[in-house]
Image (cartoon, rainbow, N blue to C red; front, side, top):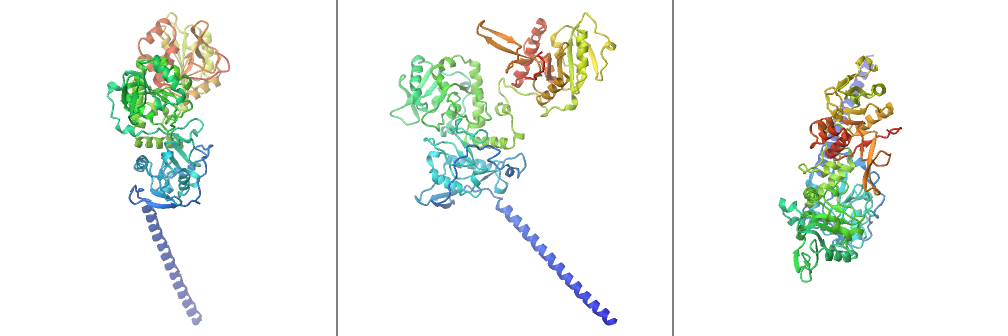
Length: 638
C-alpha cells in the first residue's frame, strides 16, 4: 500500500512539473507574439507616418517595358456609385475625404529611352497642394481616392501609349477605380487618354464627353494669372471704355465674318484684336485703330469679353477674362463650364447661343449698369474664391468630390455662390433643422369678416386634421361683434377669436402672441373644399421646406400677344408664378418680416387698396431666400 502511494505521489509530481513547463512555454509564446505584434504595428505606423517626399533630386527610375499592360479605354457609363468603391471611403470617418498621392517616380520608355512624362511646375504645385491639405493621407489603406504622380495635365505633352502603361503599373490602380486624373489640357486632335474607371478632372469638356456627376470640369489655368494684381474697386465695378472685347484668334474661324460685321457696324463699342505680325503671343493688334495691346491685360479694357469655341480646345482665356474682371459673354454651345456643378455662372457671366453672335451688341446694350455692377462684383469674388491659382483650384476640386461622396455634409448651392458681404445678396435667415419637428403641429389663422356659417364649417374640418395645434380666428369686422364662443363648434383643439382694430388684409400676417408653433396656415373662411388629408399633406411638405411658402391655390402671369398686356390666370398649368395665401403654410418668421420689415410702403399700399397681400408676401420670401413657393395640388380646384 505504501509503495502504491509513493508511486502515485511521484507521478503527481512529474505531472505538475509538466504542467508548469507547458504554462511557461505558453506564456513565453504569447509574450513573443505580443512583442512582435507591437513591433509590427509600430513598423506599419512608421511606414505610413511620413508624407510622400517631393524631392526632385532623388527620384526613382522605372523602366517601362513595351509589353507591359495598358489601361483600358475610358468607361463612358461611369457614375459615382458604380465606378468608385465607396467602402474605401469610410476609413477616416463618414464625412471626410482622404487622398493618397503616389511617390514621385520617373518612367523610362524601354524602346526609345525617353521619359514618358516630364513633371511640369504646374502639376508639381497640384501634388504639393494635395499633400499639404487636410485631405491627404500617407497611408494607402486609409485612402478613398488615389492620385498618380504621373503628369497628365497637358495631353499634348505626353506620349499617350506610354503614359497609359505607366498608369496601369500603379500599385492600387485596379482598372482606375477610386483614382483621379488631372487632365486640364485636352488633345487638339480630340483623342483622350485611356483612363478606364478613373475620375477625370479636366478642361474642355462638352455635353458628349462629360460624365455628369462623375468627371469634374476644371478651369484651364493660365500662367498669366499669377501676374494679375488686385484691381482697384473703381476699375472693377464700372462699365469700361469698350462694351465688348473680342480676341479673334480665340474664336472659331467660322464666326470671323460675323465678327467683322459687328466691328464695322459698331466701331466704338467693339474692340477686336488679332495677332501681330512683328510681335509674339503677348501682344495683340487692332488694325483699324492702328494700336497694339498687351495680352491678356487688354481684357481689362472691356466690360464684356467674348468666349467661344476655337481651333485650340484647351484655351485659358476664360480664366484670363475673370482675372481682369471682364464679364464673360459665353457663346459655346454644349460647353461644360468649370465647376458648373456648384457654381451658378448666370451670376457672373452671360450666355448666348452660337447662332446669336451676330446680335450680341444689341443684347449687351440692354444690360443695365446695375446688372453690370452685380456681374462684375460676383465675378471678382468667384475668381478669388475658386480660380485665382492652382492651389485654390485643386482644393476646390477636392471639396466638390468630397461633397459627391459624402452628400449629407455637402454645402448648398447658395453657400457655394454667396459672398459673405455680397451687395444685395440673397440669404436664408432660418437656421432650422433639415425637417421641422412634427410634434409642434401648425396654427390655423382664419381671416373672416361676416361669413359665420362657412367659418364654422371650416373650423369643424380643420379640427379633424391630426397636425393641427390650435385655431386663431381673426375677426376683421369692427362694426359687428364676433359670435360668442359658446356658439362656436365644439372641437378638441384650442380656439381663440381676436377682433382687430381696423379692417386690413395684413392682419392675417400679424405675429400674434397666441401663435406658439413655427408653422402657420393662413386660410380664408370660405376655403371648405380642402380635405383633412390634403391639409395634413401640405403641412408635411412644409416641414421639409420650412423656409418657403407652401400653398394650394396658385396663379400664373402670362403675356398676351393679342392685347399686348400681361394676364393673371388661375388655370392649372405646369408652371406657377405664386401661391395664394388664402390657403398656405409659412414660417412665423415671415409674419414678423411682413409686419415690421417690409420694404418701402408696400404694406401700407396693400392695406389701403385691400388687395395684393399674397403678392407682397410671395415677393418678400422669394427676394430674401431666392427660392420659389411650392404648390400642393388639391383634388378640387380652388
